[in-house]
Image (cartoon, rainbow, N blue to C red; front, side):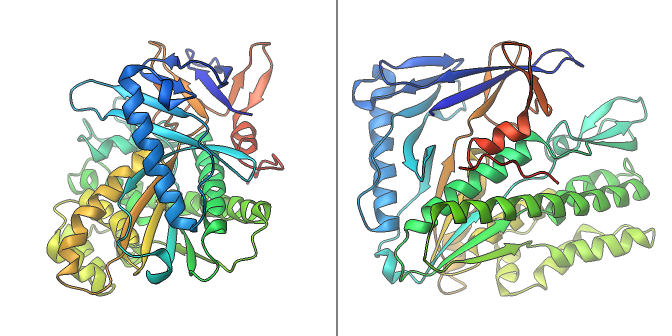
Length: 423
């Protein structure tokens, strides 16, 4: 069923309020704030008609390129029409049915200049960040809490004294693992049999540990607290990696594909993690130069990436690791990611022409971004499909006052057997 679920945040400790909306055929209608459902792009609102028609054509071209056959019929579009300065304008997610699941997909990148069979293989890369903004926080000396992910954008205002980490996997982690696995396997199953396909599971581990590096350098995070964070990230990484792999295996079985496919897992900064954790265990703090040197020693790709884009901060090093995973193998990379990770593709696209002067066989880069089907609604009415930044918790109340397990709901939206994977 073509249904969106909305979670209205309520004051703690009340659980979120769950409501649903069926996206049926008929005239275009507003979903709230700047979001629209457009069943027929040719007859949508004037401001959305041209972007939706163009997005439909781009998406169909990409899908036709990938599996060398007719693209699936277009099942309407969900559009974000944001005209605020500095915002993307109109972003369109085209609807297609794949193996019994309706996906709304936005595409990015450009098609390679040669047919897929001549390109030397395709790697589909998908992954999940760890925790959420609400599930991983520092406890400050004033007893306030500070989201660890905010350290990528602003400084810690005071010294940290503890960690507040959710022991349960978040709705974001469940939703992302199920949704991306299902979309990626349905796409991979349709790629021609004689084209090699590798599916890459990328869950950032060392890059997540580095969130605290800058604050620890300034003495705002004690080294023992930094060490606890690294251990917590390693434990969380194993759980999310397991979840993503199981969802992938279930999704691959559901598409009933006979083609061979290689499944691998990557972490671009393993030597950096090893160096960092050894130093913290010894009660010392490595320098950024130490970390960059460890990264550069990994292989030729990292030597070139650091030469053309030298990291000035630990966050820069983490961001470079995301781009490295897109640029690692020849052929074509197709990112099947959350829309917020579009920035990784843009970063990799900027680095790509610089790499072409240094190494052979730099991959072509494309992206497909499946829109989630569970959204958060803030008290002012804004809609947010990204549950990492707007974590609703693990339970909600439906219109009848019944409790809903949001992890099971998220899992059931993208798996034909609707069986939640819990660990």
